[in-house]
Amino acid sequence: MLARTLLLMDGRQRADITPGMTVDIVLKADQPTGALTRGVVRDILTPSKFHPHGIKVRLTDGQVGRVKHIVAVGL
Image (cartoon, rainbow, N blue to C red; front, side, top):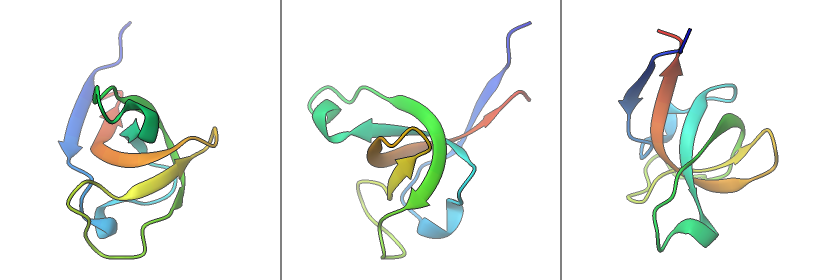
């Protein structure tokens, strides 16, 4: 059975992101293409409340990028 995915919101507000959430990020190397990488947030790296290009996070696998979508999986 395929899990349904719902994109809840963009990732520009720090208050919307917490460790343990599933998110889609753009890695620095993928900025020209906009390719997305899905993972689970380990750390929030952006100190400000808002960032126009997305809050920077570190995923549980160590990859770092800016959040483009907050994802709910398995709905």
